[in-house]
Image (cartoon, rainbow, N blue to C red; front, side):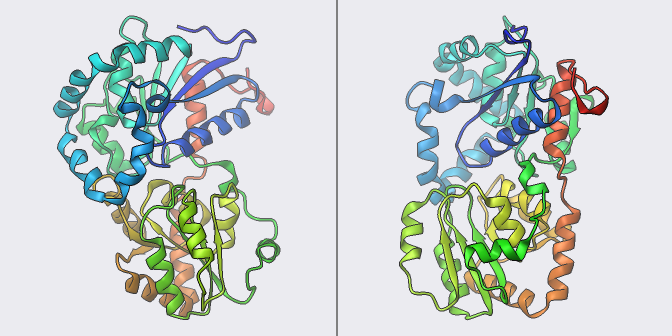
Amino acid sequence: MSRGSADGRKRVLFLFSDTAGGHRAPAEAVIEALELEFPGRFESRMVDFFEQYCPRPMKYAPTLFRPAARWRRALHLPYRASDGTARTHAVSAATYPYVRRAMTRLLNDNPADLIVSVHPLVNQTVMRAMRRAPRPYLTVVTDLVSAHAFWFDRRADLVVVPTAQAAKTATQHGIPTGNLRVVGLPVRAGFTQPLPDRDAWRATQGWDADRSVVLVACGAEGLGPVKKVAKAIDEAELPVTLVILCGRNTELATELSQRSWRTPTHVYGFTDELPAFMAAADIFVTKAGTGAITEAFVSGLPMVLFASIPGHEDGNVAHVLRQGAGVWAPRPRAVTDAVRAWVDAPQARARVAAASAAAAQPQAAREVARVIAGQLGVHARRGGVSR
């Protein structure tokens, strides 16, 4: 086990994979929070365990995820088939001989005082590989409600979950309540900071100052029926400005940029300014991804959810509806009806926006950072200086 880096900083290894955008962002948020809460005290490293260490064909999982996500059953069937404590142990036992050397190399290449997992498929495999050289292990569950059994392994020192519903699932899979923390889902600090001048920022983007801004997005990869939804809103000829974020889907961004629009429309690719886009918007139209929903809560945005991946996103829809923070509109016509209702009734929209803000846990990343520090005996001095 590592005893810190040469300069005395504690080493924290974050294990993730880009098999969906909801794993990288929470890890980056916690790393940012560690530096904000305990400046200069931690050395953080992120490793995509599939792409960087797993043998073929498993190393191609991030690349294969995007086409698989276009056919939701391709993700739903294995999700349901493997969702159970006994089944996850069986799958891990069957695959471990194939990845054992890779996991040993991962641990040898990345000495750490503590390992943080933000991906369900890494936990059992890595903890099995650590049997001869155990080190503290923290799981940060990045599924909002419907957490798969792969997230939960009793060998973890601590399991951090975003909601009470996820905590209940954890206990059902054998995690002792004393090893659980409910803190919310980590988001970057930028989402917690309001725009100094919202109107001025809108003006820099060329958005009409007199129209409500409808932000349409579908994650970092730009997956889902974004084109159909945007087209439906456009054809409804609502008094709005339509802003479409296509993420890394350059093909979609090019196609939508070349389209003739009736509604004032602005099309963007991937952006690092998502907090500003969300702070400047009035209505958020999106897929029911955990990250998007959490960021909308923190931004106080009312949501129109138009799609979900069966399995781990089903609970997200129900969670938003329970909070009164949005509506479920699985057809383009339903999306336009929801947007129209909120444009026509600003007070009703404001009530939903307030409910969304009330559901937020904006300090989750800092809470996780403090949990990590506590596990490693790093404490803040008075005045915010760590020791």
